[in-house]
Amino acid sequence: MLDGVRHICGISGGKDSSALAVHLRDRIPEMEYFFCDTGAELPETYEYLTRLEVILGKPIQRLNALRGFDHWFEVFRGALPSPQMRWCTKNMKIKPIEEWIGDEPAISYVAIRADEANRKGYISTKSNIDTVFPFIDDDIDHDGVMRILDDAGIGLPEYYEWRTRSGCYFCFYQRKAEWVGLADKHPDLFERAVAIEQKVLQDAGVDGDADFRAKAMAGRQYTWTGNETLVELIGRRDEIMERHEAALEKKTKERPNRPLLEALAGAFDEDDDSDACAVCAL
Image (cartoon, rainbow, N blue to C red; front, top):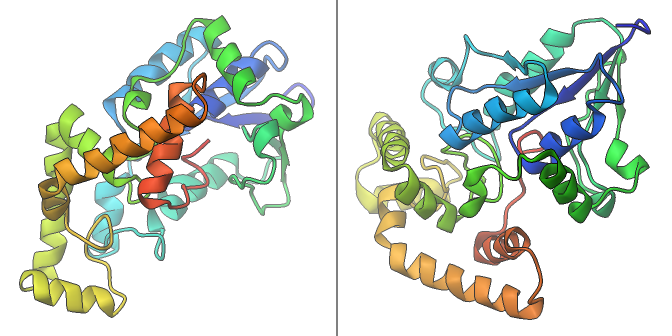
């Protein structure tokens, strides 16, 4: 803290926050980089963080290592996190960040790009934490982010081949086709997500599809996707991927030179749009 203020940059494992870390590496040598580890991240994310540490020349502080998803799942008595009850974001990301910073004055650098200035990211309400947006100040857009990563020689995390966001492997914000991608790329993780979901259904006394539908209509969520179980979802695999491929083809034809990642994002949005986690999506 050369100026008496901590400089912190959170890394989600996604392209934008990683590019911001590289962008600020030489500008702010005293920068502290951190990652909120839920213990349920994709293997590609952990591998990418290791590579990023080499580029940055310093370690990325892992927060929350002792209290990951399994701990909080028990605390919330087997209730799945959902858009209506986002205990995962609150307890595994926001609280660990604010506890780590404490009451010291700090500047938090957030990776919202110039071409998405209206998008929301995590902004602390604590009075000792000021938030700044270097990409907006420096007019760096999506193409600029990609140039930063390419110039650094790190490129994109491998999960971008089938998924457009970082985050837990079972994140309820991921699209139907991304669940299929998880089943293809990491069948063991998909089966773990199925097992967690089945335990919730069993503990809740849900008896068959009809009972599940009735309770779901009453506003209770027992599944990762909200309107169907993962077993049902993967049973519709061909239908889901057919729709996804059609949407991807449509997006590609609209802009033939559009990067694949952008086309993928558009195709996923057409399938079943949902907001992303404000912390994970950066």
